[in-house]
Length: 128
Image (cartoon, rainbow, N blue to C red; front, side):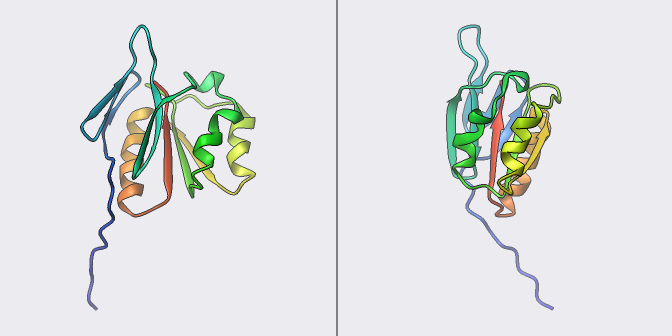
């Protein structure tokens, strides 16, 4: 049996992420006193300036730009610690047949890179 490795073109890699800073490829996105710059990304698109600030204040409408990208799975990085959003936020994905996984930002970054490098249709939102 011959094995070959698939190679997927991934434009954005998460180098690190926590509750206040994320390194995406060669860019830094960070929380400052004036601005909290939550963001979302796919393997080939980075969208800074995503409005939500915490999992506790997240509403289903906040997920619309992410869901419009038709992911197979949506990752939600909830900040430095794992914090689940309200059940209606989770239902916004599940009722559309889209899986949602909530984890702290560091775990979401690792999972995003793994899924992106496997060629999966993944969208990840990170709350800073």
